[in-house]
Image 1 (spheres, rainbow, N blue to C red):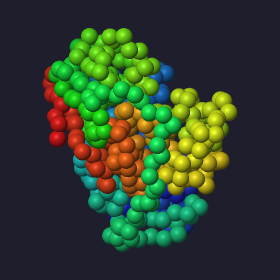
Image 2: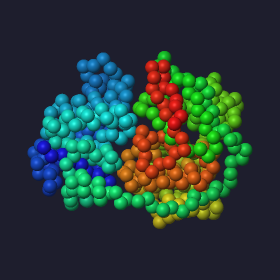
Image 3: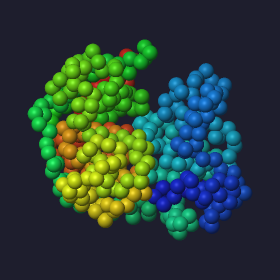
Image 4: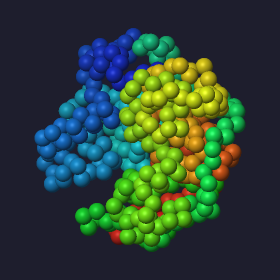
Amino acid sequence: MKHYAISRKNISIKDQWIKHLLIGKPPAGLEKFENRRGLLYSEFTLNKFIEEDYRHGNSILTKGTKRSFQTLSSGEKRKALLHYLLSQNPDFLVLDNPFESLDKASVRELQQNLNQISEEIPIIQLFNRREDILGFIDSILEIEKEEIVSEKKVAQFLKNSENEKNIPVAKIPQPLSRFREVPEILFHLKNVSVKYEERPILSNINWTLKKGEFWQLKGPNGSGKTTLLSMLYGDNPKAYGQEIYLFGNKKGSGESVWEIKQKIGYFSQGLTQLFTRRDTVLNMLISGLVDSVGLYKHPGDSQVRLAREWLKTLKLQTKEKQIFTKLPLAEQRLVLIARAMIKHPPLLILDEPTTSVDDAGALRISAFINQIAAESETAVIFVSHRDEKGLKPDKVFELLPQEEGSIGKEI
């Protein structure tokens, strides 16, 4: 039984190529799947079930169990989806980036399940990262314009990919003005604990971050990373009444959420969904200077010059007039990180910036983050499930789940 993998660089699950393959009308080179029925295991498929459960409150994925679908973790939801798809007795499975956003333990469990499944039915894996290629995969297919143009053994593909290098970049530009009176300690958490409906999330977290430090925040799914970040950046009511000090002031002692946010550059995947206007790449960067989603006023000459300097650093100066949403995903992420950094805030929080990008894009993003940490006084918190290749944080703060809530450990 032969299994295949395809880089997602040149293909999407929305392409007609995939749709035809799943109904038994494969392209030349995959005739073995002709007149066979395939099913798609993907975030896209899972979101359909999540939407159905939201509307009707009765997910088919948890039928026959005592669990509510909404109470399942990310790993459990994917496991339920896989079990359901297999119960439909497909002739083959297409796995779309199956390990994205899963922690290491969930990845290992899914790999074991897929290894067993591969002994029964053929699998086609779509991947972003080389390290995610499943061990039983036989061949890598290269796709161009929805046609198979080559087939390589996995070892040959990996060898040919080893020569990828980062693009050298210019130094990061200086801000138009600097934040004044920034304290040496940017935040200090002392014995911070959080519960939601009696369910413990965080337990006695102690963490101090100083000016210019570069940290990675780690922890498995459900360990409380999002909760912890929301207490720093957001308006999480659980933060009030606790020993949380931000920029020299105890949280809740008078400084508004807006005043706090002005001193923090922030990136999350959800930000991309906010930018639906047809703003140019240049205007997207300038909007970071005025803290707006898009640009609504004519920018000044100094703002335009600064944004162009950042584009030069990113090697994107030829794309300043392109529509931001038309850029490749990795380039969108680079622009949004630069947008968050353009004022040189005292603290930069980057929540999963490399999710769903390929190896080359992840290396480019990691190199840019390293550069920000090395060439500025901004402290950086990088959040990721992965140990990103090329990323060079000074310290790691890891959340370790316990019965009484996750504890924190500095590494």
